[in-house]
Image (cartoon, rainbow, N blue to C red; front, side, top):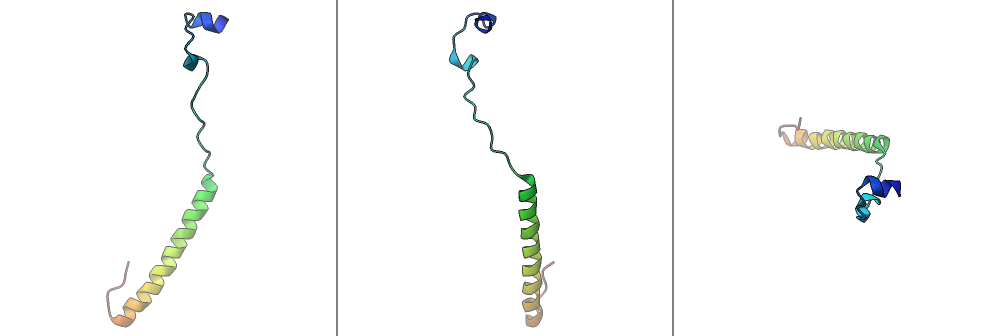
Length: 62
C-alpha cells in the first residue's frame, strides 16, 4: 500500500509491472571466435584466388 501511496494512488499497471523483456545475452567470446574464423577463411580464399590471378597474369588482390 505504501508504494501505491508514493505514486499518488495511481493504479496504472505499468507503474508496478515492467513489460520490458530482458535482452538476450551475447557470448562475446563465441562471437569473437567466429569472426576470427571468418577472417582466416578470407585470408585462405584470398591467397587461393591470388594464385589463379597470378597464373592469368592479372593484378593480385591486396
